[in-house]
Length: 628
Image (cartoon, rainbow, N blue to C red; front, side, top):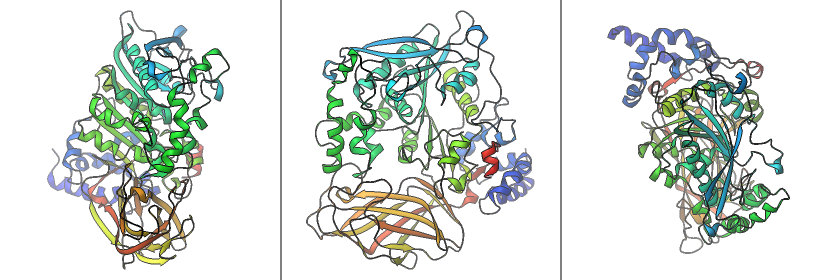
């Protein structure tokens, strides 16, 4: 038992190092190592942790697996192009090989006749890698489902060849610890039949059928995990909708909770949205053989029209195309497994609102979940060279190389050990969140609990008019600008900041794009943005109306998720325009006048001394060292 007086001294000293802004990130990197080894016990018991975090941390001290906050002291490989587990497993494939070809199988299932195409004869193509084990020994399965396996239209290798982006890593590092691995081609891609349904009902049924097949083979222990990024990170959400007894855990990495949610935000449309279906994935499965005729599926044909109509008139112009492709509500209703949710806070392709506040909805539903949210782009958490190439000023570079998680494969191994084998200590369940300046900390949920809301009125002394006109014109280059005075102290905020802005419009319509920046003199960097078509001024996907043109309405805007540190002496700038980023102008464009009175910017701020910060294993890849 640590003496109370000694504990208080250790905590007091430790907080100075764990508090961002007290010392530079570069100094903290080496200074934290020695201090944590001395004071970690006292720190973990101190009052800077919330009670829920204390309970979870105290029960996660397995000898074999160093806890998250001590991993920087472990002997990780940190100089390669991706992460590694701490200890190698012993199982191999045929002839003692660590990397070998998978065996191919077809999974047949019944497709509803209304799906057209190949119905009723659905057929999913997959390959499995099963390590050599003693007779009668069963293993759990880790699987990646997606449209990129064995796909001639994009020149990808056969499904029996491990994917270089993830499959090779899992087969070489996770499988030897006693797991099987599978790659599965979704409907209409590779050798799977039917049409490319773009995450619709046929694809969902095929995913569920493949999960059941993997969980019922004589070499399987009955437990299946799904993992993948982007499209391959969306199929786990599809599988989870069914409540399949074999699906024990999912690891969605920048995946979709719904297709429309990818490209529309409060009625505002990304430029790619109207052409996403056939324009991007329409050629998948077309390879010149007789099965190409199966692409004559109803949803394949109407897909392009639904994209255009959603931009013009709203979410569901006709039928249930988008509702069929929204997954999260059915996951919350039916899924009984766990979720390890991974998201880049600067993801340009799959915006972080797919993960925030999704993680809190999982917690509120009683689903065991963990979040890993870093300042990377559309990436895996452990790719130092790719992360650097994709990070720009105000788009993640400020958090590099601390964003690179060289402990990620170890994290996966620990997760799968517990949820697929019922072995080892239960993983810490909470959110690892990285600020835009690189600091990592632990939160029991995200957006965070125990914050203080600050509210600045547009045009007030706290957020004064700083330039531009008082009218948002229907272009992306003009509109009002507001800016705070230089901050008297460092400011820490995150989650989902809000902008409630009162406006008048010339016609029923219009759009607002809001840009939030951290400015140091004449230099400003992006810290967040929001977008809203005013036909959706109350938020969400249901169109609202108002009495007549010129009537004042309040746009209840919510920024995309962010986690921000702004240094003392800097200012925060808010700029309003009619569009920005890669969004289209509103289909109902209108001149919009902003009324400052009663319009507010709302931030959820916190005291860093009330949070648990920690150090991650230092990346020593050449790119990391050159840009530290």
